Length: 143
Image 1 (cartoon, one colour):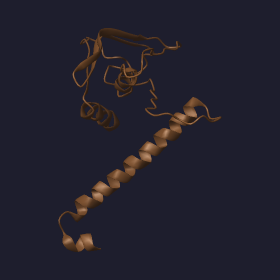
Image 2 (cartoon, helix red, strand yellow):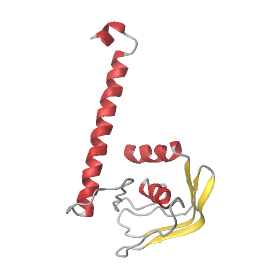
Image 3 (cartoon, one colour):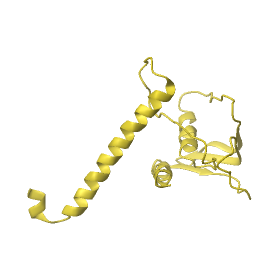
Image 4 (cartoon, helix red, strand yellow):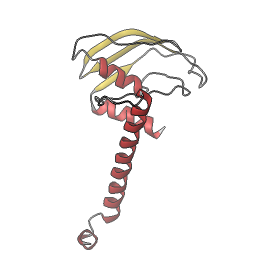
């Protein structure tokens, strides 16, 4: 849940807002399909998609088509951040940067990228903790 909260906070920091229709039923962890009504994704107040139903059925492949700068990656970033209700049992992998061509599978590339991000996040957390411990103590800062 903390990771999800960080992802949603990052969306907010990047001025990405997502709304959708309320439902009576939360997706079960065992659900394999995504079905969300009236989704709107905005970037800096500009609607990228508006009142759109997102239906992703297990076993099918999907893609976004549109010109550069039309918001495809921003919409994918919102979905990957689970800004819409997505069953907990579904894994989402999103690479927000290009990856050099290799013989690795797509999944292996995603895991490698995620490991790098997790290592950097751990390093940042350790530095934040250290700064919190040091505070304004000049003697500790000199050490």
